[in-house]
Amino acid sequence: MLEKKTLTQLGVPSRRAVLRGTVGAAAAAALGGATIKGASAAERGSSRTQMPIGGTSATLLQDLTGPDLTSRFDAPFTDLGIPVRCADGSMLFIGGDTYAGTDVLQGRWSCPVGLRSSSRVIDELAIDSCVGGDRVRQLVDEPHTPVPGTNPTTAIPTDVFRVGDTLYMHLMRGPIYQAHHTDFWKSDDNGETWQFLCKWDDVGQYKGAFQQKTYAVADNGTAYVLSTRFDRGQDSDLLLHRVALDRLGDPSAYEPWGFDENDSGWAWGHEPTSVAKPRHWGEICFRAMDGKYAFTFFDDSAARIALQIIPVPEGDLYATPEQPLLFGAPFDHGSFLRNLYGGFIVPGSTFDDFHIIASQWVGHPEANTPDEYHFMHYRIDGISNSHP
Image (cartoon, rainbow, N blue to C red; front, side, top):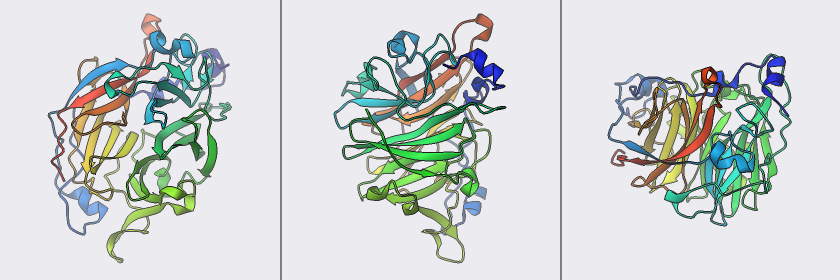
């Protein structure tokens, strides 16, 4: 059991300082520009600035975790809550670092974990069970090995999705923001047990931009994979790969999308090129939806969660307007949320009925009260789907 005192003795800095979302400006100019036919990534990024679309509004439907809601599952403090609709109809939320004590970093530490809602109605999700029976258990083996001078190791989930009756989960392994490998798992029993598929050891390839992955499952037998570096304190490229659904667990089957001015411009099989202007990417989520593709992300430098809609996976994110969904602010109200992050799309969403899971970590050391460290369910209204 790792308590705060133990972590301090190990010389571990507070995870609050590195994990929490930054409170910042309510809106920022989107990083993009007009499409240039045949343009390289650099030319795309240097064209005129595209301002974000306004008009969205957020409604908090419910907190999903917290001491009053999920302590009975030994999960009073958890985050992320990546949602996936299981074959049995339940909604499984995959949580990140989860603590069973009286505050964050206290009590039994588990990661990743699974919390479940039996509701089939997207507006009425509530946690009523967990993977593990009476209390959450780690979905995979993770010893949380102490690393002197930094945080202990952990297993942060970046995406969970379903193909047929099988769930797939991608994890980043190592100290927070210092992944030493990533790995990939599957479950054929609605997330109760998980089997290892493969891992990527070279987390430094592409300047680290293949660490954090999210998968959009298309109806053509292919998954399209966006990826970034797992360190929101540094600029990172955003890369695109594709992989056949029957080869998801084969790292050699991931084909990159890139620009080569000497060989037909943008094409599959080229060295991967950033499909968006580099920035401080936080959590990312890519999904096929309503005949198009939805990409949500947490932008740490602007302290907001935003959405882009593209017609095809290879769509131009440089030129695509960004629609802000939630803004960092010193208060919680409507579309404003203190120390926000996350932004995972809830299965069953449409552009007319759009739902996301957001996380929040707010410390109260001066009041000597527990941190607010939980995930919650928002509905977003006013999304524009008219942009190509």
